[in-house]
Length: 243
Image 1: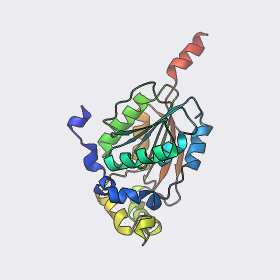
Image 2: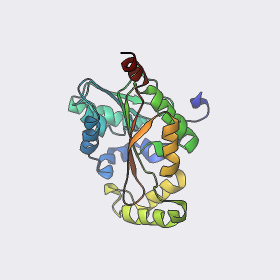
Image 3: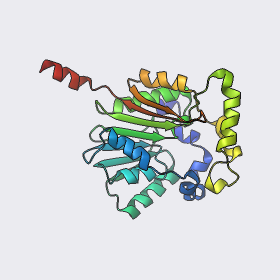
Image 4: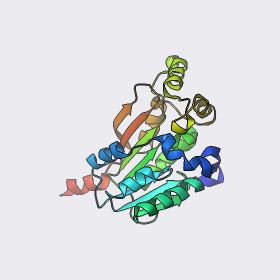
C-alpha cells in the first residue's frame, strides 16, 4: 500500500544516487561504527543475532557487524550505495552480509525476524507521516524483545530557540572542505529539502509504534539524537507468568 503513495528513492537526495559522490562518501561521512556496535553488544548482540541496517549507505556498520553476528542485511534505497556496499562486503570476505535495494516502506524481510535494527541518518528523508508508518514497520519486523538503535539529525531545542539553535548547528557543523564533511550549503539544503523533526515530535511516534525508549541521548549542539528502543517481549512475559 505505502509504495502506491510514496517513492522513497525520490526523497533520497540526488547526490546519494550519484556513483561519483558515493565513491567519496566514506571519507566525507567519517563514520566509525565501533561505538555503536559496542552499544548493540551491551544490549545483547552476539553470534546468534540477525541485524538489519536501514539506510546502510556503503555498508560501513553492516560489514563491521558481520564479525559479531550471524546475519546482517544492509538495506539502502540507492542503487549506487548498494553496489558500493556489495563491493566492500566482498572485499572484506563478509559472506553473511546481504545487500538489498529498498527503503523503510518497501523492504520485504525473509527468514527469522531480526533481533536488532539499526539506522543512522536515514529516517529524516521521510516526512513525518511516513516516519510514523516506517517506525511501525520497524517495530513489526523486530522479534519480541528486539532492539532498535535509531540515530538521526533531530532537533532537541524548543520552538522559541529554533532559529538560534539551527543557526548554531549550521555554524558548528559545516566545513569549507566538502570532501571531508558537510558544507554550509549542504546543511542548508538539508533544512530546505529534507525532513528532520524535533525530538519531542519523534519520540511519541516511536512510542506510538509500539517501542519503548530506554536510552535517549542528545548531542550538545541540539541537532542529533541517539535512541535505543526495545520491542516489548509480551509473549515471553506471559509464558513466565504461567510458569
